[in-house]
Image (cartoon, rainbow over all chains, first blue to last red; front, side):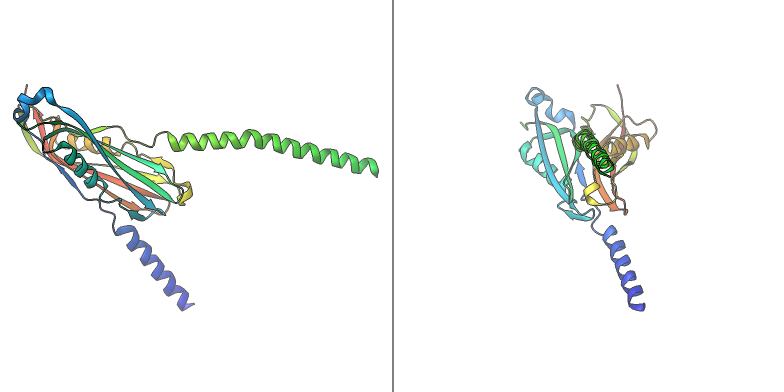
Length: 115
Length: 137
């Protein structure tokens, strides 16, 4: 009986720890750009889009979940090629995956070239 | 005795036939409903988190807002019911703008998503922080 109580306690503690650990996403910082910087290139703006996904296995096991916004933003910046990124939009979506859920972050923006 | 047996058999055949007919209707309907649930409503809108900075504006202070939602229920196989999940980003941005009276937009935005498991589902919490501004026209 004592053994069962200890086991139950350990499992409960494990579940509490599991539900609290690794549940914070990496923050992304989007610096706003002064529109005067790209005033001359206003006609050269182009739309860019980037996305990153992660999988939440069995409700509480994160696989590339917590940094997907950071990865999506990194890809967006790579597409911008050093240009001015403005008007940043974000879309969060999910897909049922039977043993878990796929989460996807899609970011889009308008980029103006630096002259 | 023979008549009773025959009647019983006929009744049994009728019951089986009725059950099969019901299955033919119910199963495809359930399958269609499940597909519709999975396909529809699994995405948020395209939410602007860092709009184009206006030429003239006044900074009103630091803003912060959150938006939460969950996906459930219970076991992983049944984890396709969104509970406020698809609107969390929109609500977080609105909450942040409204956290500073008079603000119309945010600049220099920080976006973060946290999650936690709460036995019957998984909750996701979006936090948006930034400088609250009011455009001067």
